[in-house]
Image 1 (cartoon, each protein chain N blue to C red):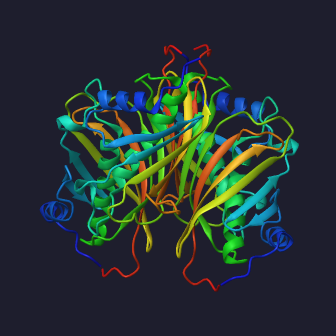
Image 2 (image 1 turned 45 degrees about the horizontal axis):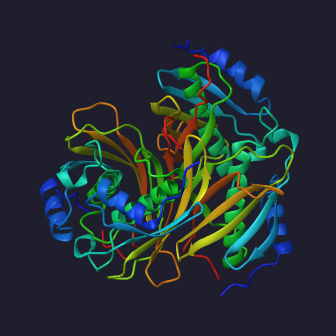
Length: 140
Length: 140
Length: 140
Length: 140
């Protein structure tokens, strides 16, 4: 069994492995994670809203954070499937918050859902479900 | 009926509407489009491969290009769903090519599939299916 | 605004419109529904478990029930997209329960997620997300 | 390496393993399969069209047939994900034809796409992408 990393350990891991990423982890729990994408100018679409790829990225990182919370800091799990529905226009200028709940952590696949919010709003702007493949040779 | 824009017109439209995008259109045909994401340093993951979000972005743009090819240069169609399967590790340093075929262009929804390749390889690195909602007030 | 039908009204509607369906509604709430597929011999796979199509059907009906709960008894909303992940082997011989929560009920699209369970178990056997198109001419 | 079964062998296998199924295999090729769902009264929706679950079932069987064509007659591969888009109303009374092309047959996952048609029509009525998990202990 792995020991769940702390939020600080996970953020240090992300910064080392993905130095260009703009998503950080806010919370980590049992089969769950909350991440934040700080919205900069570069990601805005016409009309001032956040682009779809930013939301997909945030969903993907939220899944990865929740999985690493269960498996420990292994860099090798890879996304195999992501399905996202865009629900509402994000609020201009607000960070995007991703809240992931894992549905299953199996031996070879981990699956979870992510609700995405403009910070401070109640209704999700998007909803994603994704699958990561877990390599067989991982040390736990 | 709209007139299909030329590849140059579509690229000029993308540059104006999404100045930070790194995807350009290579070809445009009946219900189809071929786009290219020029891979820079910033998008590489550990191991030198292209990140998942780059592939999702390329798929999304390929769909949008094919739809604009059918509807004309309206900026307002929005992605409502994207489902992507990651199949193989992209070849390090190669551009990502997205080849979109529209499955349906209806009054309110347009749906298409996109095969994604590392340039010069035959087997796709990813495959996506996506839906755009077309606003009712569009002028054709 | 429509008046939410009662569970009995919705079950009578389903029986009239889909006489061969084996799914019934157990509960109906704000943007939510709980449905039940009574498992018969015909749907079992080798090993005694419920087949994937039975779970897809249950997810589809759960979405439809929740949408009809919001829109009133209109027969015309149609599924446009369904994405389902199969998580665990269902328990042999148990009914399949589908719990739907709508994520959005817009003018033209309604989107929801469905957790599917073998009755009496806590971990979902499958999870689905689906979209229905709502025809513009509906009377509310 | 397995030997590809013949169409007759695959149909005999399906009949033995899934006696209640109404889908049969018409053709089998390299990473591809064509299947047919004979449409009976029980599957019709109001208006005489085929139900969504029938199309999902046909897509699932088409994937399974194409995978068994590659792996040989092992009963154990299981669907882990299916995403389907419904595109057009099926033609009343026509069989549903599913044409599957596998995108990847890996060690643990096989992924393919399926175009679904009302027999004799050119435009697909639905399009699906699905993933099967392949158990590690299979004999090839």
